[in-house]
Image (cartoon, rainbow, N blue to C red; front, side):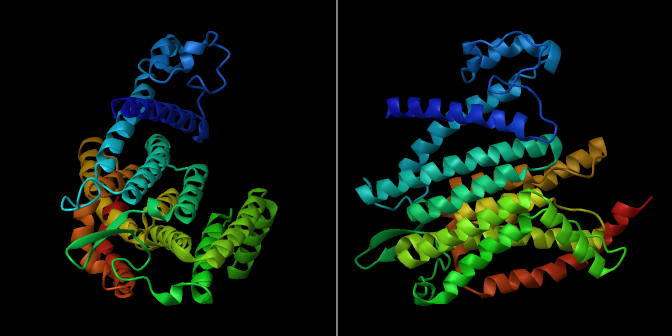
Length: 408
């Protein structure tokens, strides 16, 4: 176990180096910081030692004259913390941290395999969340390159290895416990109508994926000359942008993959459909809040990066966890937001890091969280109906804040 944890520390540090390369390379104002990016002409020649995770940043302190003092501390800490976190998360999850304490130990081989798959999925999710959080903290924007790629990873994992989804423990006769993965209908049984050859689940999966692709299209909406002119301008930009062709290709390939998984059926289809619904639900919740807050407050309350970020999280963890994360994230954001408002007079904060903190808490405390909320999600279709009813209520509650934001 000690050797395994040491190797995982190294893997985490390497992932931290990749995060740093993404943070400084994918941000809007790219900076040539780090050994894996093209250096500025002013810096000394890079050496092989500079590319070592963690220790390389100690050598790169010689570039402080260009990037500023202590610029190396944050990337060094990212690599160090991801290394420690990767090893600690492995020890926690493989020992059954996501399962009830009453679950019998030692675990049989099938449970151990599921725990390893869940650990791998969570490490990949944390990798993308770390990159998104740091860029959001720096520039209050989350690049689609981060969240879209992460979402595709989540969908691929759910289709190939559905056991990588969060665990759901339920009792069997003779006081036995069985472990399954969180799916679309959890904690209720999977409805037979969602299995092939029924076409309804295929339409649901394709609809979620194609809606996500449409949402990613570059578009503008100017209504000053009427709705018809706005539609013409929107379609003209979609057709003009090269990015639209990539989205069209993604929609075609993704649709074929979804159809193939539907034909196979079994656990693979249950995992993929659950991830697709999780992606759609996570993005839709934030998008609805974005629309309501924008209409009431007459200003952007949440960026589109937050939409794609929670969509990515939902593809890894399912729609139930995405809803829980959305309601948990404002608590930490409220404390930080009040602090910045009172002491710095800043009214805006990046929301992405708080979504990621709530996600990390949900993963680590999954057994307690799921035990607390599964009764609510057991209501089935009533849950999304209640969520829809919450948005008009939220609009009424936000009306007093309009005066706060628009007073002179």
